[in-house]
Length: 506
Image (cartoon, rainbow, N blue to C red; front, side, top):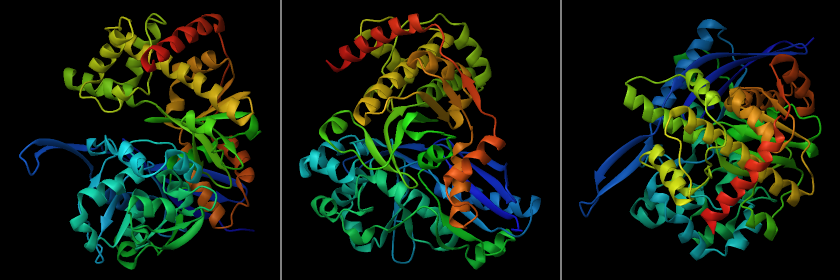
């Protein structure tokens, strides 16, 4: 009889982190949250060399690391002093340069920092876009690591001689915990620097951009053991030197892996959080002209490719809520806001959630107002109306993306799986079912942590593949089903929504 294994998933998102303890015992799996902590990027307005005020947005990596250590201490206190392994997943961009002595060369930039605003055009001026897409399978986003490293090479060239390595966000915390310098293929795939088929850094792209390949860490497969907790960290937390497992450290890869999908070819998966990653699991990258024109990415999974589009998720509503927090002096709960949204009249106006004006505006409510004016609409003025409009627009955008992906794959969707924190949003789940005319299966809510833990179990040999994990997931977590309703009115709304998209792009 196999002995139980105890592992920890460290799940770092764009608005906070969580630590989960997982146990595999006999044929069962259990998971519990042991630590949760909040953080958000810090914006500073500082004078540059010409005394012009510029804004800079950074993460506090030491605050995050301290909370990882706190999570491990809580595991030791509440569960036990033996840990078999731990794995880290994070959002899919950002990183830090280190010197040969392991010292940081600057702060950990946050991906919405405005220094990256012109970088897509600068990359395209150096590399033929079609060639870059054919090699990497990744579409152009301001936050891509390709943009970040080119910015560094061009604007911090004086630091290059002292830069020993660039560590992507998850690698940075593996390094703090045990000195590991690597990145798994799921995270490397979204940098726009990895060859999607060979799963190694593209020397052609790196050389064209002038990025030294020596700066980048080795790429490993998800499930690879990359070291152990260092002796000082183990002593500090009261634990043994547990294995460090490179999970699918891009959080979306973990979330997609945890979707309890019966037939991948039939399923559209939405990993719903600050971002909504909308896509299908396919066996090989698709990089032809139609896929590129649709801005679809081929991101590495666990034995497959996530063919998807980055869509705005809860970012817009998070920013609205943050503004109301500043106005009210307290943060309104999602429960009270959702009551207002459900009571609001339907289909008053629409936005394109992925319009550039919503990426990082100073005032999200004003950005919504300006979009509506520009497209000949009247924006709602009350909180419920604003939220409902955003949710309806998100659901309709999912329908548009589903149609694009299905046509390019040649595989129509017959069911939608929504996983992650956004799967708690029952109103958006129902709107998605209505807009797409398809059943929705929602859950698990903590899909990223589930996928993280299952990848560790795979690396430790406890499961042989994710087909073995799916029954465990269904038996352990609540899964909610939604059926489409009011499809006639939603079809009319879809036509209006598509017209709004055409007005904005035309």
